[in-house]
Length: 109
Image (cartoon, rainbow, N blue to C red; front, side, top):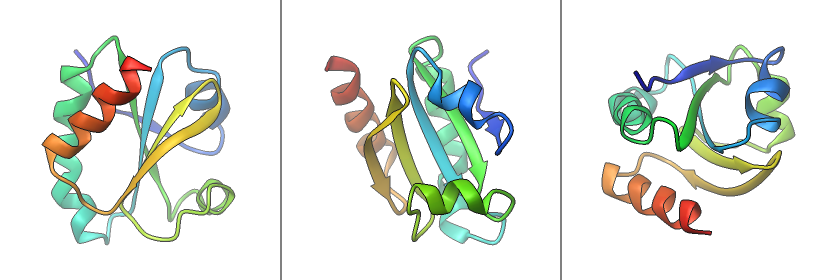
């Protein structure tokens, strides 16, 4: 129940841009220490917000086209999409509390 989905260039449009729910995308890479640090938190958020927020992970090394389209300069970057548009982002490792506050604020809109 409630887990992250892996997205890439082929599934990006259907999974993220056409999603009905608020979608949080974790832009990460295997070599990125802070990305590894927040990975368990991202998984917990996927479970906690199951059915309300779609949580996806995009490997920036494998999908440079998407990373560059959304001007991802540093990772981890978490972007929030709604209706195919970026509505907010968090750059860098943040605490679970900070992520939850952002998600709650965006769900309240």
